[in-house]
Length: 243
Ligand code: GLP
Image 1: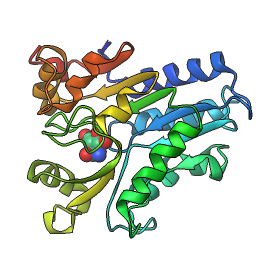
Image 2: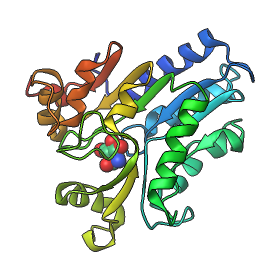
Image 3: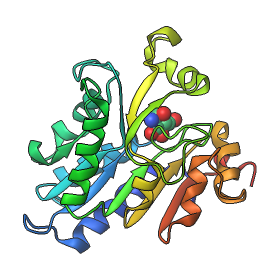
């Protein structure tokens, strides 16, 4: 889907709302959403909050799993994905705290934490809709170039490119950006019943080319979406500059 009026977030929010209305989630049969952070999904979160406040949708029976979290940032740290999610979304909707799942970047045993997360996803019956963004190098979640396309939730060292790209949130200081993250794997994302990826800006045009016209390639992990029976990319025109 190519969006011409800079409304990727609006489009995605309407898509999510339609899914929720159609699914009519209950306590016994909740709707399971995979959620991203980053600047790209912010307008979607704002729109979803608007829909909730207007009484159009409810998150009472929605379970969420976040894609990733930095290692070593307290949940109260302004750049932690915990903080981001509560600040920009969870604090403004009727989701139940116990239905929110975010990887614990402060866990002493990463492996056990990642296994717990995968087990929990299985226990609730899998993710119905995984929403995401990408990095300029085509990473989904923190599946950096070279990640196995069948990878599961694990710790991942961030590349210099990602540290540089994300340093804008840390006052431009690359030293302050965590070097390690916990992230769902490409395999975890592909297991979702549907995947919707938002891509914007000319700085992501190369990644978009690899996602759509290149071959499936572990150096551009977003290209794995080509393997998914229901993979959707919502993009603006600038990001399509190399197609
Ligand atoms: C981080 C996140 C990704 C996100 C990317 C892009 O690296 N781990 O999940 O897609 O940032 O962020 P932005 O939307 O700000 O460009």
